[in-house]
Image 1 (cartoon, helix red, strand yellow):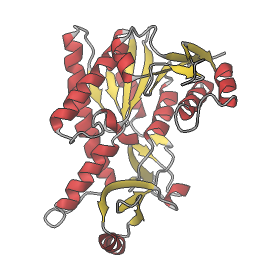
Image 2 (cartoon, rainbow, N blue to C red; image 1 turned 45 degrees about the vertical axis):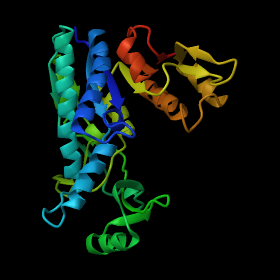
Image 3 (cartoon, rainbow, N blue to C red; image 1 turned 90 degrees about the horizontal axis):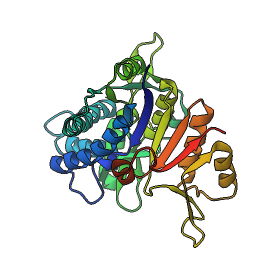
Length: 315
């Protein structure tokens, strides 16, 4: 009998935390912390797929490229995305292999370089909004816009940054490879940074594009197409609560979709915090998923999997 599949999505800041320098040693230490929660899910009997963000890391690559641009030609953003899939996948892969060895649990771990097709006519290409890379002076920003055709926008008084489209993910090129590895018992790291964005030309051939695919949108699509039983959404609190921050606050162990929709309608989950996570959970289950687990990385890494967090289930 095939194992159940769980998908976990983590942000790029899980490996490169705020106020850290971005040292390799820091990121490996953070990856080792993540490995504890991944191993906890694997021990609970799941085939695990991990999707990671890459915002801070790809930003650093672009800063490095700008600093050395007078000596070495820079890569385009799709190749920079691929670089982070390799480097971050390696860090997560190695620390998870070591963690599984430490707890004496046999499970192969593999990283898949993942391309994701987007529509070249997606509205996002007409209105780039996603800031990437370093800050520039106004003069330098104007030069780059003129020389390279970049879209540049002022960013909260801190300078100018390149902005790129954030199109909707449509097709995961390596989906069958991910499925095959999961069915063979591997833990799979895939879709890093939302996937490497590509389009199809008139003959169906793939071309890389300068864009950033939202990691959570890709995670939801991948979870649906894998037929994942559980979609794990990580947040800053161990459980979902109603009346959050009030004397009447109550932590929830379990909600049905109908209960979650009622709490949403009652304004329990604000748009700037828990709201989008609950919406993603409802969408996943209505698309055929069985369960969404919402919890914090710390809780998932150290509490029994069977009782951790808030589970949202079908009615």
